[in-house]
Image (cartoon, rainbow, N blue to C red; front, side, top):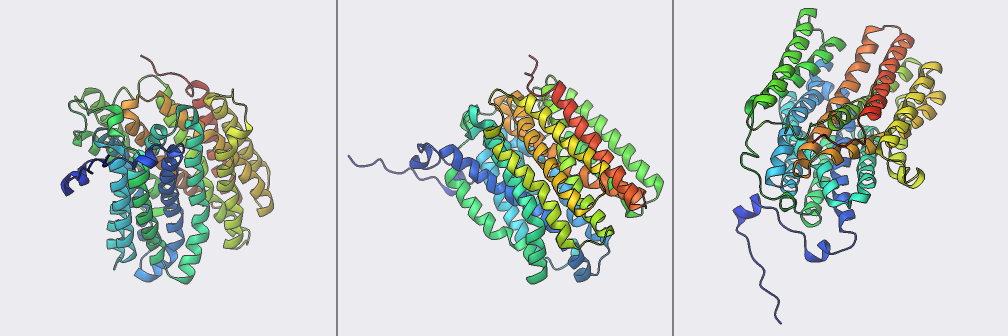
Length: 480
């Protein structure tokens, strides 16, 4: 018999409809692993970009004749746009298709990276970073949902561990790759390196990612519509909070302006919560936050990423004060993401199978807290920091995949991308808070040793918060 003719789709349909994978990919026993590997490529790319850009700050300041406070906006605008868009983009993807949104994310992120590498001025670079953040939001809001819908349920935690390991690998390689690129090819290649990786990931996603809209059916009436008031309130809350922390960390704003930013953040946050309770089609589906499993899990994710990213600021500053080189600081700091990646990938092989998400969260948070307590007790030398940072990474590598798995198990299947967007938003806010609170502690304590102790104490409190969320939230079913 002749094979049935291939149905050709007009170009407009190709741009707005998800395409199925080739049959031989779809029926392959390892198809879910190929899909997870594609998502891991995006996770690696996002974290590599997050850690690599900071290495270009001195070159950007010298090249554009800009102050450090102005150059900081290269990262700040990225975090602000990302945090504001993660939830609405995830919600849109639930209605229109997660694969489609993810592929568009690769395209926008890659185009934004190319534009950043060609930027003629600092203001244009900041604007292109905002474009890049739009693409990153489309990637991050869908990554967790794509992993959980691609992997078999019994392999979900392992698949999320692979994704977390890819993030940690990107984070670990960022300083080394960034330093090499800035020192040889120049700062523009810090952004240019994303272009070939993005093109390859776009092609892989087209052929290896499954369609997702048909898994949950057509969107319910009203789903996918925007909630502009909710979006503006959420963006205002996150923007004012991050600006307030940055201003308190040494941006030079008067005290009344810093206090006003925090008041505005609190008011916008309250307004956002009130809006979600009243809106006919809220930005955050109330079903996602029903019960305490998801809200506490999101709080745990924020605490975990705060603890993970805080040392990225703390360790180089402390070792520089002890006369160590930047290379030494980079090598010591690598112990943290290396331990994270090792635990995220290997925890399922080492820990008992009967130990559920809640037990793993408690175990990981306890290990992280023990490592931070050791940092408080030990002098901050390179030889003492490295093993304690490795233990901290291992603890967080056990905690994070189990916590994310607990959150996604509690989220209704029809809202998987919105739930994934909330997890990614918690990660983004935790990242920003980790950098901000450590910078604030170092700024408020002129004595290096005192600043180190204050910063570690804040991280220890966050680790205790992560343990508390695990004790009361992880592994519990949503109400109703």
